Amino acid sequence: MSAERQPIGVIGTGYVGLVTAAGFAQLGSDVFCIDIDADKIARLKAGEIPIYEPGLAEMVAANSARMHFSTKIADALARARLLFVAVGTPPTYSGDADLSAVHAVVEAIPAGSARGGEQGHALVMKSTVPAGTGASIKRVLAEQGKHGLCYVSCPEFLKEGSAVKDFMSPDRVVIGDDGDWAGDAVVELYAPLDAPLVRTDIASAEMVKLASNAFLATKISFINEIANVCEETGADVVEVAKGMGLDDRIGHKFLQAGIGFGGSCFPKDVNALKQLAGNSGYHFQLLNAVIEVNELQKRRVISKLLKHLGSLVGVKVCLLGLAFKPNTDDMRDASSLVLSARLQADGAHVRVYDPVAEREARSLIRGVHFATDALDAAQGADAVVLVTEWREFLELDWAQVAARMSGKLVLDGRNALDAHAVAAAGLTYEGIGRGSLTSLSG
Ligand code: UGA
Image 1 (cartoon, rainbow, N blue to C red):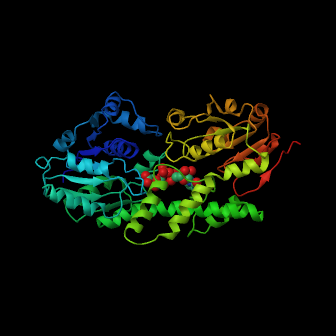
Image 2 (image 1 turned 180 degrees about the horizontal axis):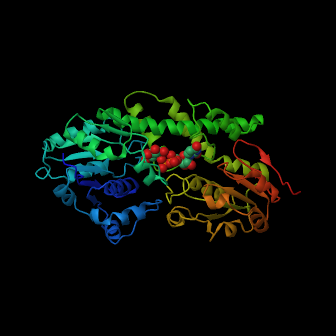
Image 3 (image 1 turned 135 degrees about the vertical axis):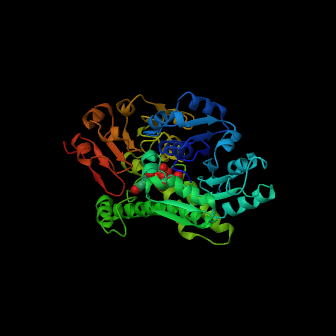
């Protein structure tokens, strides 16, 4: 293999595809990005980045000479051997992963143009798929006469909001393959990142991804249940998590209690793993609890509001943040969706503000007032709820917020605010799993 970086194709230009493409371009590869969405490709060709991801626009701009955009898979096949697949695998009604976009990619590769062997092509699966997908795709490839087209599983561990950094310094790279040239080529592509490498069989690589997300989601639901018990016992979950996390077998990460996990990955992947187990006759009890705890946790704000305010009919509630977490405009499975709907169903008037996700949110959240900034959202509010811990909310001047509000309640759904600063402004602070702190200034 020459020292020259090999060109690659990336099919799907969503969060995963675009970051992967920009990352490999940064490492020196020519990258042929393919998407069936002609509008998206036109925008990318014009230098516009269709998603909000810190550092991504800069990375794409810096590598524009090496990044090529097209709607035709043939353009990637003609120039690259490795075709990274990064298309969506949303949940179906049954909770299984919908693999139709993955199958459409397989279909779109013409038998004649996909060469096998040392000089051939390989599909490198980045999309999160159930364990066993690689084996079934290989069967489909054989049925369609696409012999020799190799298959590699290379699951993605990027976090939205820090995806560019995660690409450049991954905790690990997992490559599942049949021990052929394609696995070696993917190993070589990742070599400059100098990350711990797990090279294994395809099914195990697929399972590493699902099990990792399910474990992280379990950690969150676990600390959320501890938070709920803390509320009954007078303990503070933030202190408890600090004490637990110092045990390096436990660690501090993903022990932040709050109003539940969301996003395009955890809810979908936990469910998909549960279904995958169920389809093969195994009842994955733990994951049922993880999912149920998360659903109840999103609604916990409602019971706290009721405790402080009585009925919610006619009450004005301000939601700070809508995205499923900070530094993203992603609204998929965001706790704000459940919260705004529940509040309105209980008769509350809802004012919302998110610094980045408003455009996405407008098509999903109806009947609320979209405010121009946090202070505007707090105008006349009986209660302010922190839903997404954007930095600008952590730096709010609570005296100014108090002056806008008509009530005094601040519910910190992410345990991210300075409780004393809130209380010093004459407001009542309540977090998740840590009791409340009332008005220090009387
Ligand atoms: C997650 C994984 O962290 C990535 O490793 C994985 O690659 C990705 O899914 C994927 O499968 O593509 P992401 O969905 O971007 O990444 O978001 P996270 O940062 O993991 O947060 C997920 C949710 O958990 C957020 O709603 C966040 O608010 C919540 N969370 C996180 C907590 O409630 N408490 C915590 O302590 C940590």
